[in-house]
Length: 273
Image (cartoon, rainbow, N blue to C red; front, side, top):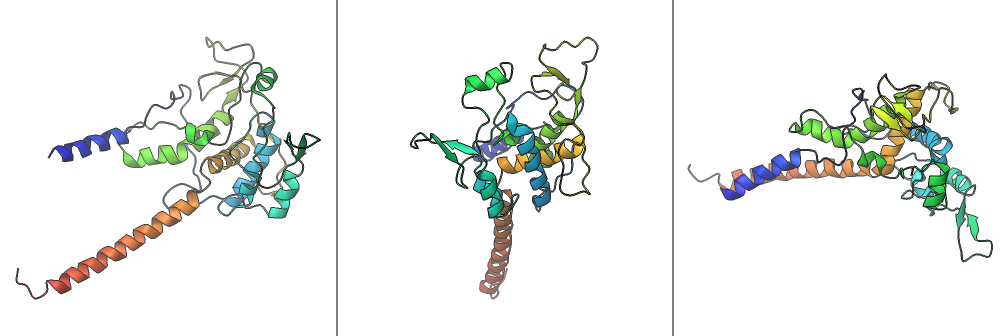
């Protein structure tokens, strides 16, 4: 009996999202529909490629991604760029290598995405004392808490999609001036989603990035959704393979349970109940 109560208590504790960060105090979040949501969800390759373009042209000027290698951009389940394309891209970046006489070399597929700054001090000097966070797992470190923490569906969605929702809402709710009575720092811009000022100025504007696909609108909302999806892929690049394995395991267990039931019926068929 004690074990049963312990298990129930543990399940309740695990059902409550841990306060890893304070919830945004601004306008309510506008939750998006993501292709990777749900049990059968997968990444949209075209969206990830567009999101990488936004990251490369806009975000990477201040933010690093030091857990992502160039070769990851070619792997199945991700942006799936051609290897030759990423080799060419990597060769445009230089990696510091003290063992070489020149002190640096062109990047190769195995190299991690280079940081835009050499040191933390240089980073802060270029960003008015702020330290832009690394993007590698940021989508896992941010989430939007749901109102009903004991609802397992909402809890699962909060952790699977909450990071992408958070980043999207952050990017689309910048305002030129804070509301009356709200004070922000001299080098900050007001963000309605956060309900406060932030050191990161609004990074997006309409027609900032030129997509190859002319059918995709060049709007802040589209850029924000694409780069949010790409950032979630960076934080969870094996999501598709993990879901595939999980589905196969469930199918195996279902078939195994059916076989065990049939075996039980066969063994006990001659026994009166």
